[in-house]
Amino acid sequence: MSIDTLRKRYQAAGQEHLLTFWSQLNSEEQASLAAQLDALDIERVNRIYNKAVGSESGALSPTSHSATIDPLPKGASDSVGTLAKDEEWRKIGLQAIARGEVAVLLMAGGQGTRLGSSAPKGCYDIGLPSHKSLFQYQSERIARLQSVAEAAAGKPAGSVIIPWYIMTSGPTRQATESFFKSNSYFGLDPKNVIVFEQGTLPCLANDGAVLLETPSRVAVAPDGNGGLYAATRSPISPADKSRTVLSDLAKRKTLYVHVFGVDNCLVRVADPVFFGYSIQKQAECAAKVVPKAYATESVGVVAYRDSKFSVVEYSEITKEQAERRDETGELAFRAGNIVNHFYTTAFLNQVEKFEEQLAFHIARKKIPYVDLKTKEIIKPSKPNGMKLEMFVFDVFPFTENFAVLEVARNEEFSPLKNAPGTGTDDPESSRRDMLAQHKRFLESAGAVVQEGVEIEISPLVSYAGEGLESIRGKTFTRSGYVENVEELDVLA
Image (cartoon, rainbow, N blue to C red; front, side, top):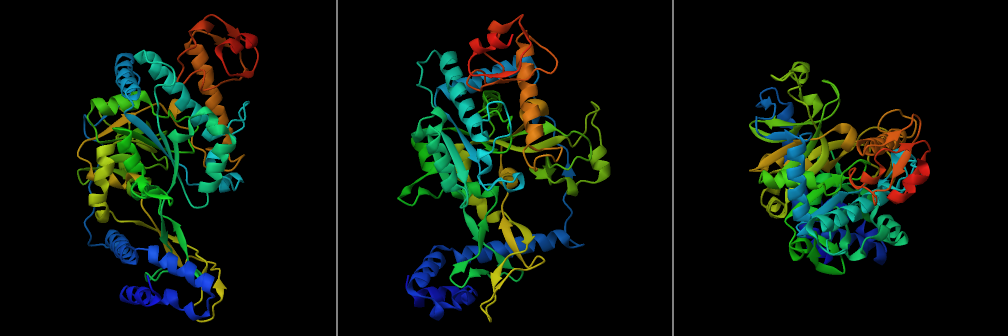
């Protein structure tokens, strides 16, 4: 696109100031800025800004409609813990896995900044005896589950594949790809580990003007974890514009996708129980939740907003609502959101049709920018603009068939959010929760683990406690890490 055409387009959009320094740039800088502006859908940016600001001001208006927030309706949710039901769901899920109908999509765009690391969060070592990263644990759970599904279906080794799509961001994509390559993809076939990148949106001043980071570069930020929907429609690689995550899923004949965040060390990747439950319920979208630890816990809950499924933030619920109990004595609003979701690929392909109806959320931030008069780079001391984000759960109200599965927190949720030594949701709590789970695996198999003994079991040995039948009756007196069942004998 010529500079004249570009200028007219941005003039019409009210964003011509982005070309303020054009005549002062060298040819390389001009080419870089022109390419960025050409690729940017500036008209969409303006629409997103207007809708986000309108939504925000509407919510704050005293005359605006106040949403009716209700607990989940009866029949919309179920919970694990009943052996017969769990086994039925697990069987359905394993059959779907064995037929090659499932995939997993990991949201891994974040860096470990709060953890004192600039590497992608998935590279983080939470301090287990094996010193495996979060990425390695998830890789090995996929490998183990493929083997379990093969055995259940009587299929040969290596015949079942669970494709893994890893959504990164600009700052983490290259480091993530390098990490997997240098670790030989932790034993998975590289062609089934697909790394792609979430999109970005320009950072805006409060009046909607796009900010310049430098005279030749627009300031941008990732578009939130809800950016995954647009990212699945974008080219996986610039080298092949025709291949997207959605086209790859279609090529593989994938019907169901498990989506989750990178920072939960207990996540059951491609959980056959969750798949089986969601398939049996004929859900097009489902959420896995955990019971709130206490009434006023600062966590969003899956609930009903204006008769539609939604994630309601804790700040939107009154103290009275938070403490309300149902007829069983449980908290009425207890379905804690853990960013762990099921989708049909048919639903993922439908999102584009209603995406324009979704209002992006405004995050007011301190955003460095170039002063258009002085050309000086300003680093503000207080919020001066906004980043626009979509959340992965923003699509819930648009679902026709939605389901919720409640699982045990100590078995499936231990988030890594805070710096070492914080006391909650930190590397130490992740390590503790993982080792406590492995102790329960051993005890459920009929073994005794002496007080103070810590045993880490590789995911390649057991995905969720299965495959440990041979240790019944044994007493473990030594701590250690095992890569196969036979190694447990040394610790008894």
